[in-house]
Structures are given as C-alpha cells and as structure tokens.
Image (cartoon, rainbow over all chains, first blue to last red; front, side, top):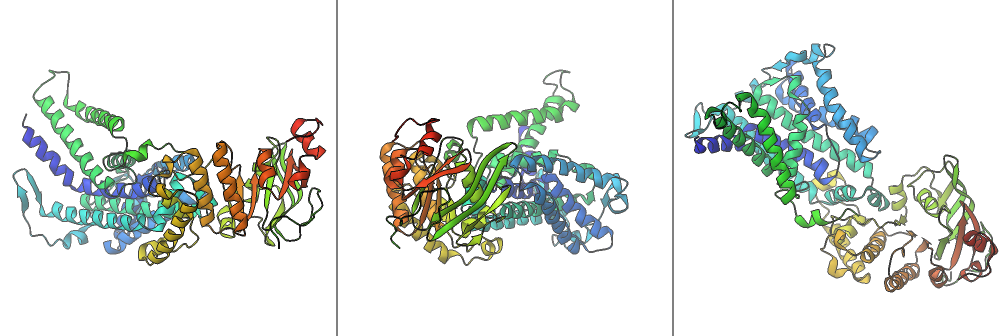
Amino acid sequence: MDLAKVLIDAARAAVGIPAAAYALSAIGLNLQFGYTGLLNFGHVAFMAVGAYGMAITVDLGGSIWLGIPMGILCAVVLGLLIGLPTLRLRADYLAIVTIATGEIIRLVVRSSLAAPLTKGIFGIQTFANEFFALNPIPRGVYGIGRFRFDQRSLWVMVVGWVLVLLAVAFTRRLAASPWGRVVRSVREDEDAARALGKNVFLYKLQSLMIGGAIGALAGMLLAIDQQNVIPDNYIPLLTFYAFAIVIIGGPGTLWGPVLGSIVFWFAFEFLNGIMTAAVLGRWFGDALQSTDIGPIRFALFGIGMMVLMAFRPQGLFGRREEMLIDGR
Amino acid sequence: MDAERPPPIESLPGAAKPDPILVVDHLVRRFGGLTAVSVERLEIQRGTITSLIGPNGAGKTTLFNVLTGFDKPQSGQWELNGGPLVGIPAYRMARMGMVRTFQLTKSLARLTVLENMLVAARARAGESFRGALFGGWRRSEEENRARAMESLGRFGLTHMADQYAGSLSGGQRKLLEMARALMVDPELVMLDEPTAGVNPALTQSLLGHITMLRDMGMTVVFIEHDMDVVQEISDWVVCMSQGRVIAEGPPSSIARNPEVIDAYLGQSHGEIT
C-alpha cells in the first residue's frame, strides 16, 4: 500500500469542493441546531430548493445571477413554511416535520407533476456556464504531484471557500451580538426567554430561515460544480453528513463546522483509500470485495464518531465545561 | 401611599383595593373535567407583597401561568394597570412590566451569569436581526452591563459573573433568577415558590431581597408554602383551594381563618402556624 498516496488523496478531499460545500451547509445547520437548538432533520430540503430554484430560473431563460438569489429566496420561503406551523410546538415536532419535508421536496421534484419545471428524474443540466465563463484562472493544472486541481475545480473551490469565510464572518457578527445571545437563551430554555420578554417564535423562525438560506448556498455550490441537479442527489443522508460535521466540530462554535467538514472529508477519503488498498492487496483474502468498501467505510466512520462522543463529546472546538453542565 | 401596611380592607375573597395594579375577573381554566382555576375576582394592591397560599393542587401555579400568558384560560379577563391582558403573548406581558419566575428554576445553563442578566435587559438594541448585523448596540450594551454588574453585586453574585449559570448552586440560581427578572424593569414581580428547596439561611436572604423589591416600589406576588415566611414578609395573603380564592386578609388574620384551616387540614383543628 502506498500510504503517501492515500494521505494525499485524503488531503485533496479535505480542501475539495464537497468539503467547502458541506462546511457551508454545516454553518447553516449550526446556526439552527448549535446556536438556537432547532432540531432541523431536513437540512437537505434547503440545499435542494436552493439548487432547484437556481437551476429552474436558468432553465426558464434567466441568468444564473438571478438564479442564485432565487435559490436563496426559495430557502427562506421554505423556512417560513416549515416554521410557521411547527415552531410554536415542542421541539420534537420540528424534527418530525423537517425530516418529512426533506423527502417531500425530493419526491415532488422527481414527480411527473413537477416534471415540466424540474425535468423529473433526469434533472436539469448545464445551467452554470455563466459562472464558469467568469473563471479568471488560466487553463491548466495547478499543484504538486498528486495534489493537483484543474482550473475549473480551482475556480469553484476558491468561490466555495470564500463563501465559507463570508458565512463564518456573518455568523460571528450575529453570534456576538445581542441577537445571538437571545437565540442561545432560546436554546437553553424557551420559557425563561419568553418570561424575560423575548419573542421566541420570531427568533426561531429567523434562525431557521437564515440557516436554511446558507444551506441553499451550499446546495447551489454543489449543483454548479456538477452542472447538474437531479432529485436523487438530495437524500436524507446529506442532512446527516451535515449533522456529523457540526457534531465533530462542536455545536454552537464558530469554526466548528469548517474544521468539522475538513476532518469529515479527510477521514472519509482516507478510509476509502485504506479500504481500497485492503481489497487490492487481498489483505483479508476473498473475504473483502470491492463492493464492501462503501458500507465498511461508513461503519468505520460510525465507530470514529462513537469514539469522539466518548472522549470528546463537545466536538473539536467545543468547551468541555459546557458538556458537564446539566440542562436544568 | 404608605407601602408598609395596606389600609384597612375587608378581609373577604375578591375584596376591592384602593389602587390595584392587577385585577382578575371571572377567570376559569379547566383541564378536561377538572376546574383548576375559577377565580371570580382578585385585586392585587400596588406596592405591596401579596402571598398566594393554598394546599397542593389549589391552582396557584396554574393561576400564575394564566396570568403571565403561559397558559390560556377558557374564559375571563384580567388587567394590568387597567389595560386588558387577554390574548396577549407572554413575552409582551413581560415587556408591559409583569415578569415571573418559575418554581423549578430556569437558569440559562450554558450562558454565563452575566449573559443571563444581559439577555433580560430591557433595552433591546442589537436584538433584532438588522440591529445585530448593522451594529450600533455597543453603547446600550455597556449601560446594561454596568446595571447588570451592580445588580449582581446586590445579590452577591459578582464573583460568579463569568461562570456558566449551570455551574451555580441551587440557591445561587434562585438569586440569579430574581436578579435577572429585575433587569426587565418590572412593575409587578410574580415569584413562583422562590424559597422552595432553599436552606433557611438563604431563605432569609431571599426574603430580604423580596422586601427590597417592594421598597424599590415594585409589587410582588409570590406563591409560598411556609406559613412562617408568609407571616414574616407579606402585607396581604390570598388563600386558594380547589381553584377558588377562599380567603384574603392580612397575615395576622389569615392563619385564624376557619376556611384556610379547613383547606389545609380538611376540617377545623384549631389554630395553625
């Protein structure tokens, strides 16, 4: 096995486009879950409506520069639609409704009913030419050895990571303000916040919509990179990737989602490389086939999460004292 | 008016007060077949400490919840300073000057003690989304911080200001909750069993703070079980049983009231306290 090769591939994944997009997605989820305590189990729905909002706008003849705000608008409206009926209820209702919403969005966009707009299961392709036309990076391949990216990937990566930094700055501004303090008080105890004169419902709604809009940006970034939106990309697993990233990084921390995403994609690609080497090198004889790589990779990742929870439940950036406090 | 002792008022349920801050009228809250609260008339005199007593299940906390907007009554109305409160959400009642605490202390555990205080501050600059993004809240934040530290000093919590509220002892949390309620600048403070589960020394300190609230011009209504405490600091006592107000009066008379004794002991057993 060539360990260097595996490590370089993992490092490529750690700075790649999915890492940037999921960092962005996790920043949105962190605002909802980490700061406000909202159990949004349908974050993928925000990514999906963002990507579809943009792709449909372009498909109908609009510019992508109109499509991107449309995608954000779709996510804000979705947040409003989910939030209005559920945020007055107990926290678990939001969890149930959001997890269902994620699937409803996917099933609706792939239905024949919506096909005139969404192109059904085949989805919409090549809507981001305007985006790539702006690429200032000259044609070529950049990097050293295996750690290389072409000008196209590099362009998406630069935009993606700049968006991540902007989203961090935005979150920082919010979290450090009295608004952020109120939102954290809502997370700790809604009734106490209400008794102190805070309009809890409004704060939860704002948090859901803002976090959803950031999630939509992540969905758009992934869609632009692939020049493709298809319904079955938006499976519930994406939500749980985002949750894993938030938890690895530490919920309610500023840089947690960013580092969490980098660690997540590094670990994932690393496990992938090790498992591939194990299959090719026949370390376990015939017991391990190439089709086993995917599932075993997930299992190993799950064990890693459990170890993290056992030894560092606050995540990489979290504060241990916070975890030791009982919720009373 | 003289806040030390209320003027002579009839010791009858629903008695009229000279300057009521809170007036309750025909308030009914049912849970299925159970009538938890059925208060025909209740007036709370401004600038006094009124204790609300009654056996377990009398409906005291339910009445509190309804009055502060945390629960909805089936019928009836109530007024704060003459303004009707029916249908007004709890957070707005707090802004109108009626703030409550809870029987089970609700500290915001993973906020620091100081943040607990600041979150309650009445000046809300920077609490709106736009205000947070565009800034301009630093000055009111500084003022609030100064006020919060002063208040923490009064409650003996200065040294804990930067600790998580969740790391406080039970008694300190009670103090914090009371100090925090004051940051809202209330006119009427509703305390749900402030002395429950608190050691005698801290109870004395809490009672001192409650008296201080009145001396600062606030009106206090508090739920209490301990008759000694009631005798010690209340200006007026309201006794509930099975959802109704069965007796009202100054503390000296209430303990001899046969209705009250019946409510607590089931039948007349002579004097209590």
